[in-house]
Image 1 (tube, rainbow, N blue to C red):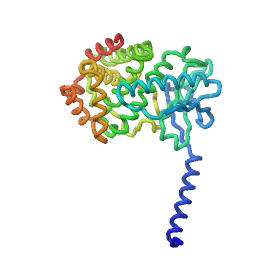
Image 2 (image 1 turned 135 degrees about the vertical axis):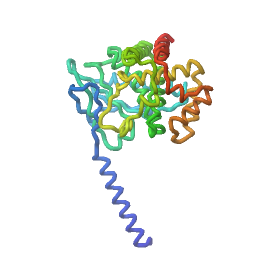
Image 3 (image 1 turned 90 degrees about the vertical axis):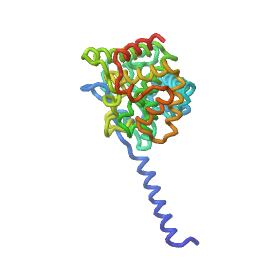
Image 4 (image 1 turned 180 degrees about the horizontal axis):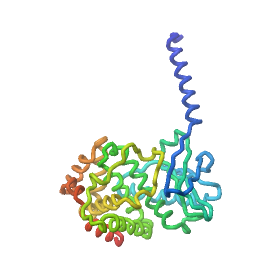
Length: 318
């Protein structure tokens, strides 16, 4: 028979385990995804939505939108496959909550309520155009978020786990995430690709060049926000890249790398970086310098905005 002290320890552990299971089963958290200031938010409880699961994907939807959910899932499968085949990168598990406003309803965002355990997975709401039943009827913003935004968020989350302890690593996080969005839309829908690139060009022209700027420092002007971990904050902006010129500059940086040295360099860069555990941005720049023969850190600190604009404009015609 086990000694009394061992029985007591096992009993305490059993009680703690039961309490933990109960806590997880009843605990939930609300995460706000805000797209427009001053507009109403809709509260969504994932537990009250239907689920469509296939492989690494879970789509949450209301019963009348099953067809739309299947379309979105098909897009994600194609996108993840493209990234895997081109870069040997596994974007891992991903969840989407489809939120379709009623006709005439102008929502500003979503308050997404989910169980504590669900925070371990990426779950992003897709706020579509009102009354949407099929992607064939979707507006540009909806298509941009599904075809470009989803793969962006998945890629950035993967990078953030390794690199976002360093605030200067955003040229890798958002930069490569943007490049994955570009790669996927180039394969699946050039219309969406060109729409995003046009907006990025506008960010550079209006946001920087028209203000008299000629240079941009990705290591000082495009930083990871302190106190913010992707996917865990109380305030999220899934389309935040539309107005910040840093997204456009970092995308142009990776487009130039691929154009001048071949896309295989990006694949090799990520493979080497993944072997370093938790490197900082300057270590990452040294790896890329070894692969390209360029002084990458110096390039990042002195991005020519005219060249950036030209790179983005050419990318739309590729």
